[in-house]
Image (cartoon, rainbow, N blue to C red):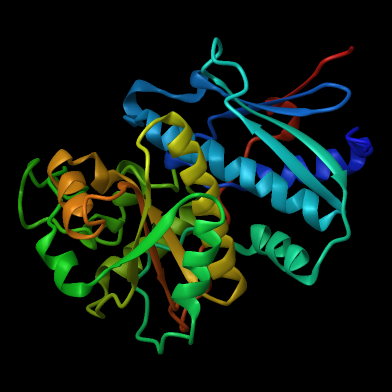
Length: 319
């Protein structure tokens, strides 16, 4: 079995799509290394600034999403991936080694890869919608294939599980009036720059304006809240959760749904424990909350957030 990498053009195309993965504050905390037979993913701690207050779980979620994006892109280009996660215990920032084998792309492979360029985090209020038959089952199946589970946070539970974290509006830490939905970054335009969600400090002005319009509306938010969890709560679990998050986001995009990952609410120890108890029945650990729903029909979709150049995150090793 030949596990050599495909030609340079295919590798660079796949890596360019991997760079579209979401990351908290849009810090894009990854770097890639290529040798003759493998692509290697590393955590780039130099991208993390103290002011961003990003916790390690979020870094690993982001890198896991980039890793899954890479596999999706390769599959559509005719190459299946073989992934070794955390391959060197002596180097905790060495997250994955990826080799490839020839593969015949399926229609699903192509559709998922196309969703990479279509997906963006949409923090606007979602409109009322009829749930497509089987959509939750499909998202759950895609997450399970990558070692994670999905549980819906029902409306009553969402109201009950308030978030003890500081909002963009300046409410004090521990204010019980701050809920998961309020922490989705919808309230004020300043949330685009200050709240710790997977969108970032490099947000285009158009996105700030869109958020301001969303804040001004009195329309309710009809987003579904989905909690993604894992059986373990270590670094590997967070990396795998990022892969599962990517699978859910791309699948939702493929069926025409808007999405937005939320991680800041889980920084509340109280909320984290309550979600584990009330939603996951003490059998799994919360990793990220995903908003899913129908985007507003009266406005343009949010613009893409900027990404680093491939040359800035890629190194080649001559062997």
